[in-house]
Every structure is written in C-alpha cells, then in structure tokens.
Length: 461
Image: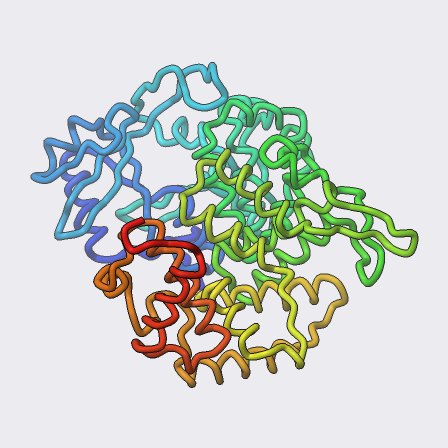
C-alpha cells in the first residue's frame, strides 16, 4: 500500500503537486499536504481533498502566483489556482486564547510546522507530508493510533475540547467514519465538556451530524455522543427514548431501536434524509406510550413524531427540503398493506405519499423489521410493489397534473380562479382515483359542473 524510503513512510505525490511545491521551494519556502488526506492514504482510503500548509505568509503566497483567491486570509488561508487546479493553502499558525469554545481570539502566523501541528485536534489528523519528497511527518504518534484504531486528542484533551467544543462531535464523527474507539482520557474530556456544545452554532453541529450519519458506522458515533452526554445537548428529544420499553417483538428500548434501525438502513446505502428518518422515526414513542393491559401502545406516534422531528430539524437549521422529506417519511412510515387492499386504495396511497417516496418508505420498513427481529419478511412488500407497478403500467391518474383537464379549462367553463378551482381539481382527482375510467375531458367537465351545483357554488361566486 505505501512506499518506504529509508524506513520512512512516504505519501504519493502527483507531478503537478511537485511542480506546485517547487515554486514555494525556489522562493525559500516549504509546502506540505496535511491532515485527513495523509491519514486516509495511510489507511488505504481514497481521498482527493487535499489541504496544504506552508511557512509562507498569505501575502507571500499571493506574490508567488498570478491567481490567488483570499478565501480565508484572516486565518491564513488562500486558494491558489495553478495549472487549472485549486489548491487551498494555509500558513503555519498558532492560535490565541479560545474564549467562546468556538474560535481563537487571535491567529499568529509562524514559521514552525511542529508548532502548527500541535494546535490540531487528534493525533490521526496531525500528519504532514512534504510536497517535495512525500516523506510523512508524525510528531504525535498518530501512526500508532491508526494501527491501534484509536481516536486520541493531541496533548491535554480538556484543553483541546475547551478550545473548540465542536471537536466533541468530530471525535464521534471520526469514530463513525473509521470504526475506531475513542481513547479513555479523550472520552472523559468529551463527557465533562459536552455542555459546551450549547455555545456552538447549530449550523456547525448540523454539518458534523450529517458527516457522522453518512459514515459507514453511524451507530458507533451516536453511541459515543449519547454516552458522553453530547446527544442530550443536541437532540434531547431523541434521548428521551432511553429506557422506554416497547415489549412485543421488540428487544431494545426506543433509543437503541432507533440506533439499530439507522444502522440497518445505512447498510442498505440510504441517503441522508432516509438515515435521519430512520433515526427519528420513533422519536415520539415516549410521548405517546400507553398500556392497554396486554402491551404498550404508541397510537399516532408517526404523526406526533413528524412534528417532533420538524422541531428538531428546524432548530438545527436544516434546509426546507431536508425538513419536508424527513418528516414526510416519518409521517408515513406506518403504512399498511394487505392483499385485499383495493386498487383505488393503492392509487390513493401513491397519490398521498408520492411515487418518489415509496422506495425509501420500503427501505425504512425493511430496516425497521431487521432492527426488531434480525430478519425482514418482504413477501407483502413484494406483492405491494407488484400492484403499484401494475397501476403505473396502466397509466392511471395519480395526481392533479395527470387529469384530463386542468385549471384553465375549468376557468373557461366559468368557474372562478382561486380556491374554488383548487377544490374542484381535488374532487376530480378523488373521483379518478376511485374510477380511472372517469378520466376523460368530457366526463370530468360534467362532474365538475355537478360538483359546483352540489357545493352551492355559482359561476361567479
């Protein structure tokens, strides 16, 4: 996997990177690839997202190249365009005091790579590789921690997490990404300072959570967030499921079942939105649990859960698309199918949940079953899928846009534009979902006319 030069580990460099580095060298400066790209190279993980660091100050880098974008120049970062490629280059620096658990009060540009690497978060992220020779510098025994599969803070972990509380989530995220354990002192520091995450912007928390959920081992990272108390800070609604028994076929409490469902849906290669839905699909069970004397009940937990999830995601400032998609999946995850279900009921199901949502709802159902019992019986889902496909092949109308008439034609027959048109179109769709044969222009215009009379509408009302 790796080349070796006189016993040293060597990072593989392209000729273009070497040409880029030669400009720094000829001007009396040095250039290194630093951080995650080197770590992943040592692990054999593909990573083309390179960060570069140099002893040249930003204004000196600007003098070396014709095209330089001052992307974060106050913190020493510029983007150099060289031979058509973008290179993000940051000057060696030391950070001043962190007064808000988020960012340093000042940044000092320095000439020492050793001092620059000291300010980084974890040993496995503190590698640097010379862009001339490729020789990898490891001042903090990061390679040993890679071999031992350990996440360890550099130096005093309390100081590292006091500097930036988001590193608590980053530790969990790297654990999820790499399937590594968090070293004991590092975890203890996470636990003692978890409350400081309240000082971190929700946008940064959402970004780290996204990376964690999209990793190969999201459950591992979430277990660390939960056991450290960090999950209680960012998603207290989710942690309320801890200790809430479900009985029946369930063998885990609500929280652990949610973690397992996420784990199973991740194994299916799910999107971020589906992973979030899996994590939050039962978030309202603690709020809706009842006891009928035989078993626990959770009536309408999917409806309440959709609103709880909406509150969580809004608090994290998720996009409207993320909020709407995740809550829609949660709201409909309890869908029910039986072989005696009518075709009109299936058409209504498609119209209600949306054709594009159905594959994710099925994946969520399968993951939920796997989490409950360790296996999924897909016989009914397979039959349901076949019946949905048969309806699609029949080209039945499933939405207003599929109707044989539109709002313009209703206006032409004298129905006023506005709310009355919308109500009429919805009624026509319901009619066609019951009986696809009604979806002709003549039939629908006639039905629309009778609907106006039934509702007491007038042509100019």
